Amino acid sequence: MKVLITQSALDGRTDELASEINATYGEEPVVLLCVLKGAYIFAADLARRLTCPVVVDFIQVSSYGDSTVSSGVVQLKRDHDVNIEGRHTLVVEDIVDSGLTLEHLLAMLRTRRPRSLRTVAMLSKARARGFEAPLDWVGFEIENQFVVGYGLDHAENYRNLPYIGLMEE
Ligand code: 5GP
Image (tube, rainbow, N blue to C red):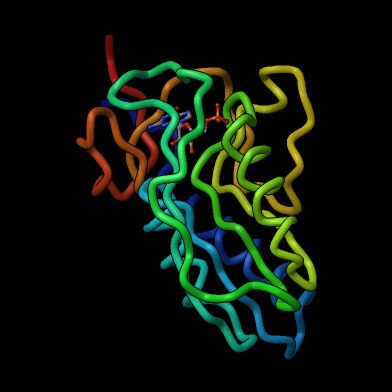
C-alpha cells in the first residue's frame, strides 16, 4: 500500500475544516449527517472538534457494491432518524467521485426542508474529473485514482487504515 495522505496531514486538515465550520455555525445547533460507511472515521474526528451543539445521525447509500467504478445507481440503504426540518444540517461525505451520490442525496434532503444544508467531504476527485462539486468544504482534492483507508474500503477491507492509501497494482 502506498501512502497518499498521511495521518498527520489528515489530522491537520481536519483541524482547519473544523475551525471554519465552527466559525460558520457559531452557537447554532447542527445535525451532522454522516454518510455510511466511508465517512465514519472522518465524521468522528470532525465531530470531536466541533464546538456548537451537535446531533449525530447516519444515512447510508450505495452505488458501488464491491466494484471500484460507480454503477451509476444510487440506492438509499438506511435513512436518518432525526427530523432535519428547520435545522442546520451538515452532510459529512467520504469522497466525491462522479458527484452522483451527493447530488442524489442533496436533492432528497432538500425536500425535508432543513434550515440550511451544507456539505463537507474529506476527499474530492471533482476537479480532476472536470466539474465543480456542490461542497462547502473539502479536505483534499485528489487525482482520479482509487483510494482506500481512513474509512474508505475496497470490498470492505482497509477501512481501518489511519491514512489514505493507493493500492499497488
Ligand atoms: P460518486 O457518486 O461521487 O461517483 O461516488 C461517491 C462514492 O463512491 C463515495 O461515497 C465512495 O463510497 C465511493 N468512492 C468513490 N471513489 C472512491 C475511491 O477512490 N475509493 C473508495 N474506497 N470509494 C470511492
